[in-house]
Amino acid sequence: MTLSLLNIGCTDKYSCNKPSLTFANQDIHITTLDADPQAQPDILHDFTDPLPKEWIGKFDILYLSHVLEHILRAKLAQVMTNCRFALREKGELWIYVPSLEWACKEILAGRETMVVQGALYGGQTDDLDLHRCAFTLPALVQLVAHQGFDIKQAGTGKFLCGWGDKVYEIPQNVVVGVKRADSLVAAGD
Image 1 (cartoon, rainbow, N blue to C red):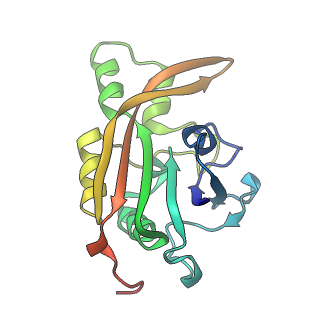
Image 2 (image 1 turned 60 degrees about the vertical axis):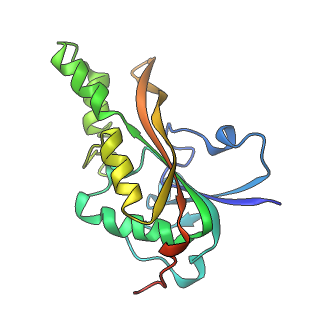
């Protein structure tokens, strides 16, 4: 059975975790969604806006790699609602964000660098490349759990981050949630 995966906000234009590597041993069909037309996504849509009805329950996996930190906190609830609606029953939500714990430890230890600044504030190459919020692992777990997902996995992993001509390995927080059956609320409710 081919799994339907929606890769939100991180097309090949950006340096993110790749779902094709995460799910290398599975039969998946990847659809890309982005608000940036220059990213040339399969679907051009701002995921902070309500979903079209034809997307309700369409996907087995939603993959948000280094996306949530770019969303205004006031719009996080809509994004999480969209995630819940877009997933089929027992669908999985994969979220990766920079580790706020790591960035704070680096600053407090006197090791504030441009890489740490990038983890906190984004690359700032354009208006979409700004970080508008940050997450500790417990805060990310709480956000996902409170929005109708059971936590399947939560932890810290490594992320390759480019700055100038160098690549750095930095920690990222990772949460995988499974859509609860009791979260099957109709769109618009």
